[in-house]
Amino acid sequence: MTTTIPGRTDHVVVVGAGLSGLSAALHLLGAGRRVTLVERDLLPGGRAGRLDRHGYRIDTGPTVLTMPDLADEAFAAIGDSLRARVDLIPLHPAYRALFADGSSLDVHTGADAMAAELERFAGPQEAAGYRRLRTWLTDLYRTQMRHFIDANFDSPFSLLTPDLARLAALGGFGRLDARIGRYLRDERVRRVFSFQALYAGVPPERALAAYAVIAYMDTVAGVYFPRGGMHALPQAMADAAAEAGADLRFGQQVTRLERSGERVTAVVTDQERIACDAVVLTPDLPVTYGLLGHTPRRPTRLRYAPSAVVLHAGTDRTWPELAHHTLSFGAQWRSTFDELTRTGQLMSDPSLLITRPTATDPSLAPPGRHLHYILAPCPNTALGPDAATWAELGPRYRDSVLRELERRGFAGIAEAVQDETLVTPADWQAQGHAAGTPFSAAHTFPQTGPFRPRNLVRGTVNAVLAGCGTTPGVGVPTVLLSGKLAAARITGRHTASVPGRARGGPAAGTPATATAVPAAPPAPSAISKGTTT
Image (cartoon, rainbow, N blue to C red; front, side):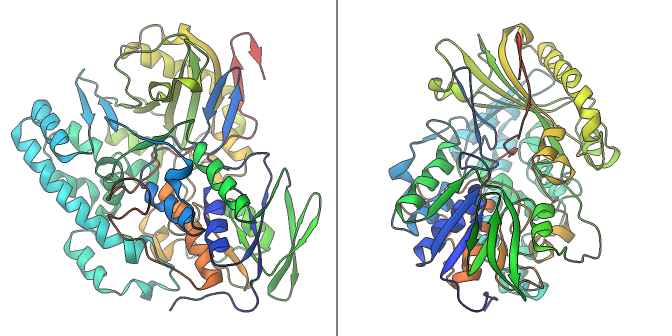
């Protein structure tokens, strides 16, 4: 049995209408609770926000969706379904990888298609190694999901289940890079199955092999795109919550919590006081701890993941080598992770994520135009340049990234940009994200599972945390689960996700993640040709 909050819980206020808050709201509604959801922005989504700009509909947050069955669980809690509200388009390929030597690899989620592509790219031995890797990734995911990901922890002793021994037997406590290397010999191919460690904030050679579960989500489970953009998911969740009876209050900033002893009795915004029996808090950890008036003690200070510079570029042309999602790798690899996680330098040979959502949904841009999302990982502000430095550095770094893309074959990309929005760590920090990163606390071993900041905080008995800073962690699927787990702390009802089964959602075996999950910027450093906003 895991701890649930004591006393009356009839009326719950959820602070924040991001994916975690919306997930919590739907699960609470399904358990019969009255829910008031308070959001400072005028739209739902939080990190998964949207910017409407000169005919472009820009997703300011996640760009990769896998594991839609977890979103469907939230809808199913109120008798609704994801498929009834969102048109999910499977992406083929899931990614395209472009390498410094001029080679390219399409990453397919179907086993036969990917094996055939790897045989073309690197030979039959690599294809055979991939099939063995795929089996291992699937076993790893099934072992972790029930007891290590979709689970509330009260102490490290909660880990002591038979699946812990199974995880050890699978090599989950070894190193990610070494484990992937057992199956794949080609260094380029290994990158495709290990780059996800970046978003955990740990280099592949130092990351636990257990983190390969993210690669399962990306390369085995299937990648989807909601028609209308990624923001269609939180909008659908908000609509479903409202129809199920939730009271959604947008444009209100929570300023403080009223307390009586160890209980929160009301949430106070800049406009009103809302009495409550319990509260779910989804802002970034420092904001949440500030509201609670208490920061839990830890043996060591929290370490944060790298950040990112994002350029949302509306262009008058595109490039045929770009898929919906394209990974453009530099020649360097280990030194890149050192720069991002140790020395605090900008990437000297950048690896970039380029998303072209108009490849799948042309309606996201004006007729004849294209939308490109260019993400360059960078150090967070605690390790690298601070927020003040980024005010001057941002435009120069934007220019250097475009020059690098020109050098890699994207001829004329700088001149093709007609409208753009630049987001830097200074913008993430202004949004309230610690260390100027939307990826929150890194997934080092002391910050994973039961060692990650808990969703219960000592000294307050009826407040529960949700979001990427608490369990289970960073990414769309884990954030959706965090809302579910927060609701379970209140209701005592927790139905474990069943690996490989989606209720009313995509085909069986479709979990999901968000590769590169930046938050919605507050007042981004927008630079348009001829316009500054």
